[in-house]
Image: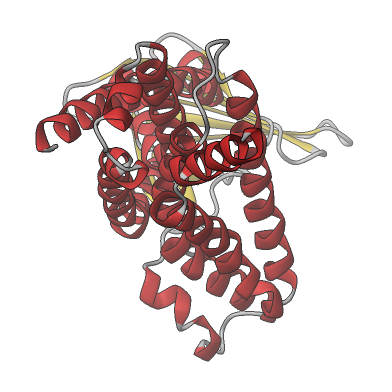
Length: 376
């Protein structure tokens, strides 16, 4: 029996890897489109682009893992039925529960791994991602301004830099500032340095000219300087936002009710997220059981198990929809929080009961005996 369990578990694990990596690759491509503008317009380096998109993978894997487990288990057990392998196991007296032990083992391992991903991997990835995103969008660095190109900021400021020096400074700076409706300011300098301050991005000009023209009176002023510092506030140069729900650990989430700085809706959202980090990983076990229970307890059909598979897929979709619906309802009222647990536990106990206590051969033999008795 151990050899059979290892054989089935190996097939399920390989199928899970193929399905999960295929789905991850497709979703990675769709998510990476969000950062195409940073690459084309701001000159985001390829390594930063790859790092930012890879930091989204733990969150996506956590969502796809139960679905990939369901597909892998369903495929393996259906193939074993078509190849008559499960029929031979049942004829040898192997119960449905023992046949499902490989799927149960894979489901438990995936659940434990997802607990780690949800409570450590995702918070760490979210923190790193937000730091990188804030740095890319707000820091005036070499990747924002490329040599020999005009860069227009959102607040009407256009900057041109001739060359980036090895020491971090720049040479040949031209700035056109039209952020104020009644004034136009032009700055040119031989050299300078791009810096980031607490109030926003700044440029230190060295040996240059500042020219200002009033658009109403057409009054023109010119100033020659050796050193001049200017601040350019953009709409995205604000300080980093507060910590998001995904960045917090489970202890911070579950204790949010005692946090006076949070609003009532934020407290509910944090508490629901903390409970989901306990519940959601176990959907890997539920869907692994759910995928095989119908195939193991049903009678063999030479025409295939299409109707059983269709019913299992339909119920899997309903469970996912229930999780989403009860999560939204619990965010409005914590009285709905127990339904999140019931949405997991009721199908789980039903699957366990059917696999452990339901014996289709017993009912088949009883029916055969009744038919034989009636025939006499």
